[in-house]
Amino acid sequence: MRDRPVPKLTALKVQKVKTPGRYGDGGGLYLLVAKPGKGSSEPIGSKSWMLRTVAKGSDGKTLRRDIGLGPVDLVSLEEARDKARELRKVARAGGNPIAHRDQRDETPPTFREAAKACHDAKRAGWSEKNATSFLSSLGQHVFPVIGDSPVNMVSDKDVAATLAPLWTTKAAMAKKLRARIGLVLNYAKAEDWRATGAPREALSTLLPKQPSEGNFASMPYDQVPAFFAKQTGKGDTPSRLALLLQILTGARHGEVRSAMWSHFDLEKALWHRPAELMKSGEAHTVTLSPQALAILERAQAIRTDARDCLVFPNRNGAALTDNAISKLVRPTGFTAHGFRASFRTWAAERMSSIPEAVAEAALAHKIPDQVVRSYNRAKFLDLRRTLLDGWGAFVAGEGAKVVQLPLRM
Picture 1: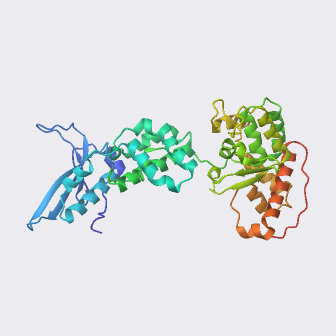
Picture 2: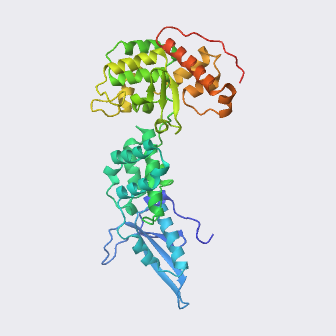
Picture 3: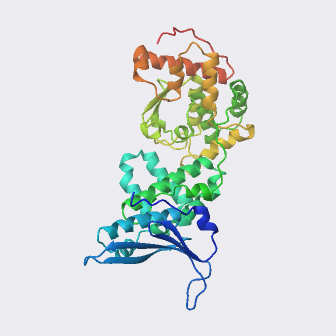
């Protein structure tokens, strides 16, 4: 296609080339490596981009323009190609690509301002949890590095430098940040605040390979009762009680940390988790075993606020951090999240008469409606109660009564 010339440069070549000269990438885009010259203000070896457009002027004459696209340390190869593609279209349409370039560069917002604008535009389609974590994660890890940079000047190298401290040590968070930075840059491009969107293959070149995450390390279920007993025998703290409730209910970190007293119906032994707490975005009810109710009674005993509040607050009344719970399990070499897998394996091996869909529903995994309808919803909840009551008894060292149930679905 006329606007997609076959590229001749690579990011590696752009990085390594030292010899002064002009290196074509196709379509009029050139990499310029400065050479010594009388009166030249460019240091020897500095690199920049230049686009040469050739188009018919209004008088029918051929009009050539050489357009600077910025230095290589601020504009990546991919960004230069995107800018060149855009300005070639302007030239072919009879416009002034230099004026268009300059107009685009007028008073762009900072990355921080662009992120907030993106958040305002997108939040209506997000859960409250996602909307909050979007800005809080950027505020903690990204804004201190590139928050005050004009969004049109944020390069692939800047993004890589921002992600580098977390890239191999906290890979999951780094991936979330990469996606959120990319969303902001794509939004900025759509708003004409910058010429390019999210970084593409450049990050793979600039950052090391991330370690394989695999599954969360889960404690073998036959070791859970001893661990549970050890934790139960220690002093009651919000983080320890939160961990014990997480084990007994097969819940995720965030669901326990964000639990409010108003979510619980202790008389009916039910935990009604609202949609905004759930990974699926759908409200979910959990049955509470006698052991789980006992943990909640212990939490009531150290409760300091009579109003509706978090069940497991930190000292300041805010939600616990992931680390506050995880650090209690870390010495074992396993993870707190892994107790979900411990429960699921126990259910498969020790409660095999309970249909698999019941165990999946207990973990708040998506279950087809026809499965629920085959039992009816009340019966399906009863089956989940049987399963979680059995798990509670097993974890507390009281054994688990295996109930034989029909396998018909």
